[in-house]
Length: 187
Image (tube, rainbow, N blue to C red; front, top):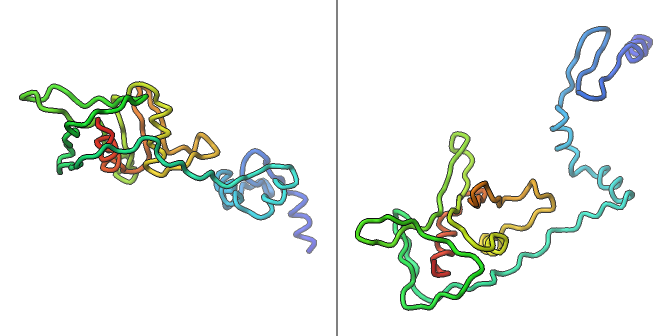
């Protein structure tokens, strides 16, 4: 009992890091500061303190259905990713446009510019959509409705991003869904 009092009185804790100094020897804490934040994120004590402070964590809002419905016609995507545009149907004037690739032989219709990118040894997949012109915020709103991706509270946690050069990036491999949706819109 007496030795523990001496030990506690001679120990000091560094507030900026997770290292304790006990009798001139360094002892590391079990968790890093990032792990501590993650562990206490959903802790009941944190919820009580936030309720006293008036912090409101409302549940995520319900997703809206897509504004633009797909055009009538058969949508077929080949194994290589090419899809034929819908013919003999007038395409409405959308606030955004997605141009297909060009420079194909025999004046063939190009591919939709939707690609999958795999990073970190293939463990993280992202979908990239290029050649989007017009109102990108309306495009992202429609894409969010089609893929059923809710708007996060924190913008850093958003699964949809606009990269430099106008490329739109979505977490996860949604290439087939996005190509099916864009073909249905008439692009």
